[in-house]
Structures are given as structure tokens and as C-alpha cells.
Image (cartoon, rainbow, N blue to C red; front, side, top):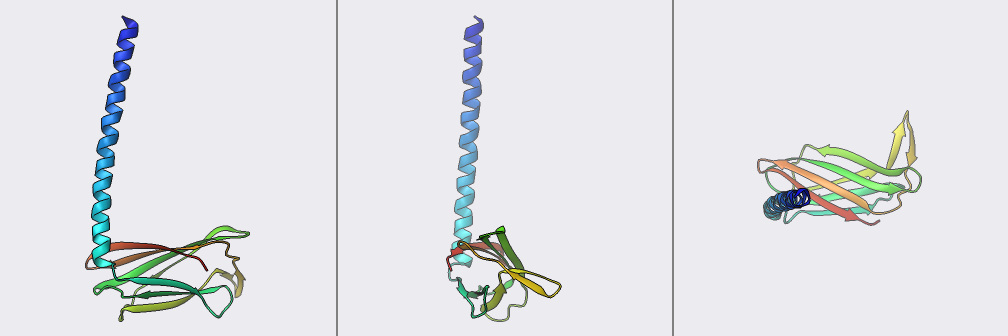
Length: 145
């Protein structure tokens, strides 16, 4: 009798976990579809590029076809280095008067007037957060230099 009760309890617990995991995954799928729809409508024409600049350890971040009504763009660049692990650069673009933005970004650290270049050892990951009257939209890309 004790073994039978243990088996029943085991199956009840198993069924509870099964139905909870199905409910969570279906909610996640709906959220992903909504987010994809939003991204394709507002950011579908945005073009992003990351290229080497003429200056050493500097890249050029270019964003074109910035959507109307964009008030600011937050950027986050992360990249692996040979000797310092994962490094990054963050910033905000506030004054958007045109639909194209270009900026040179130094990949390194500066302190007291002395700058140390990072030895980039892999792709640069770019996350852009567009904020405007349409809400907030995120665009992610990866670039090899």
C-alpha cells in the first residue's frame, strides 16, 4: 500500500511539472512573436556597420535609416580580448537630427591621459536600444573585424 501511494504521488508531481512547463513555454513563444513583430515594423530598415578606422584600435560605428521619432539610442559594444577577457564600451546618442549617425570609438581604456589599447580577439557584439515615441526597441548584431 505504501509503495502504491508513493507511485501515485510521484506521477501527480510529474504531471504538475509537465503542465507548468508547457504553460511557460507557450507564454514565451507568444512574447517572442510579439517582440519580433515590433522589431520588424520599427527597425526593419535600420542598417548598422562596424569597420576599422584609420586610427589604431579604433572602430567606426555607423547607423543609418534611424526611424522617425527616435529620441535616443543607447549602444553597448562587447568584445573578447587576448589578455583582459571580455571588454566593452557603452554610450548614448541623444541628439538625433538626421537619420544617419557615425562615431569613432576607441577600443581600450584611458586614465590620466594615458590610453591602453585592447587587443581584440574575436567578433564585436553590438546592442542598440532605440527609444522614442514608439517605445523601446532593441537591435543586436555581431561584426568580425
